[in-house]
Length: 357
Image 1 (cartoon, rainbow, N blue to C red):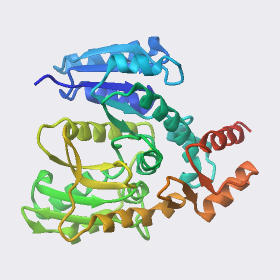
Image 2 (cartoon, rainbow, N blue to C red; image 1 turned 90 degrees about the vertical axis):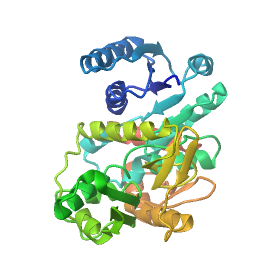
Image 3 (cartoon, rainbow, N blue to C red; image 1 turned 90 degrees about the horizontal axis):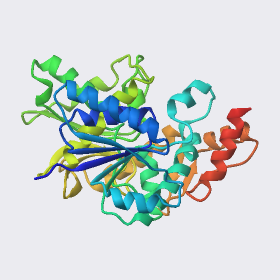
Image 4 (cartoon, rainbow, N blue to C red; image 1 turned 180 degrees about the vertical axis):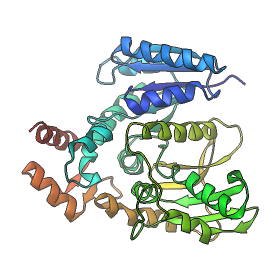
């Protein structure tokens, strides 16, 4: 069977890390690197090609000029017709936001991501192509918002996947087994990771569900001990490489012929992250028998306030928590208590204006 193609659209730090990781994965025959700046795309493509080739991987990597704000975007995307599409656009990436040092709950920045993702959604839908879209801009919430208001990403990558190796290594060290033998099923939303991968012991954790087994033996108690153990972690640009590894794990499952166990956030209309079975044929939840889908979804919904969100309504409207609403008013001098794809551009402009000040 011919290996699939992957289009990486938008070349920020995460997109570039994803390119380098995918080029060395052996998953794809063709990698298309797309940007409105083709010279930048070509240089990044060549960097990935050289590095991957030195490590024994030789995918076809080439650059394309592609701007999802341009009228010809749908036509160009339809001509490329990628099997898989990876995007992570934002008006201001998380690492630049962190550098601002502004006291605002994470949810307060959502408009910076949603405004771009909604515009991209409209452009992709016009192309009318059959592709698996991996949306990596705050997927735990934004993917659900887009899918509840029309067309949206298939899934995201990242947060729910990233604490799992910590659990596996902790259990393996205590039981004298290999980390690979530690099977983890985790339901968790975006905020969870930052309490688990942290150099201090948290007083509490966002709501989650966890089951861990080793060769059929339930060791969930030992796994829960791992969650609150101090774990120094570099939340800087190197973090993008970790998310790219999560992306490769996801893509390996999504391109498999047979269902493969993994974890994914932002699946269709569902908030947060889940254990799943994924393959070329699609994605299904992979919950232990004692958990219901409704219970898993409710757990992730209950975690939203830890990001500064009170609720995401079934129609896709984000309702901020009182804390976020007050913080936005203090920063912007305007009252914003909800966010939708339609209102996101206005909120995003207000945020960028405040940051410039």
